[in-house]
Length: 284
Image 1: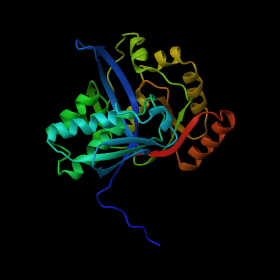
Image 2 (image 1 turned 180 degrees about the vertical axis):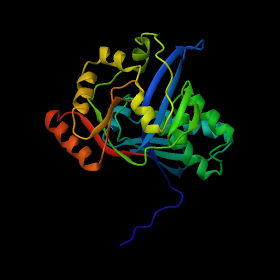
Image 3 (image 1 turned 45 degrees about the horizontal axis):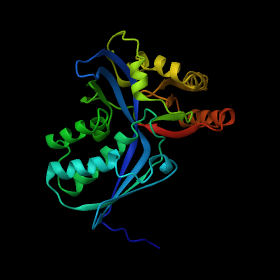
Image 4 (image 1 turned 90 degrees about the vertical axis):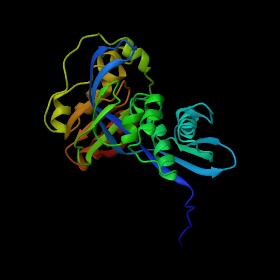
């Protein structure tokens, strides 16, 4: 039996963000760091649903809902308010966030959720994805939000929000693993050693990723040594071609030759570390 779907309800995926490489070049005068990063996006992540309502509301569901709570001050709610102000719309929405990704884990999280909210609202209110006002809203919400709004592979420079689209990885099998340990982004950046180790190289996206690095990894490992163990575990898996930490951690990812290798790695890691969170996915 078919089920009727209310066309007024907006459902928007918020896929996990990966930094295939993350080079920290310098500290800027504004306090941010000058970055070069290769963004890519998984096929899976959180889901944002907006339904027309008499007044705004926010509810979190899903495996990590308890971490978010039904708080009226989060990036999804801020994105809704910022869009409404920028485009002078009056509609109110009941927002549900299906929180499937761990929080504060280096894979976009709140930035992806905010970007999904903006995409859904732009679609509903006829705002083009390239509208400069939409980009301004995204930049004001956070450095990763513009990349998540774009939602495709890109080279990010500046704070990471100056974007040039690049070729993706063509649904490369990937395994995301998090040890269920939060790592503070501010603390990781504070422990960066200040050494500029050079720019991201040229070539196709996979080659650039393989030749690249994550300059925040040593700092994250110092704060949370389990990151080192996680990366070693991923690197030891059969068929892995790249094991790296994403963002400021603690989530790490492995890119694999094929789905069978990825799924074999997932089973092996579950047997060794049953408490670690995993997501078997593909990266476009």
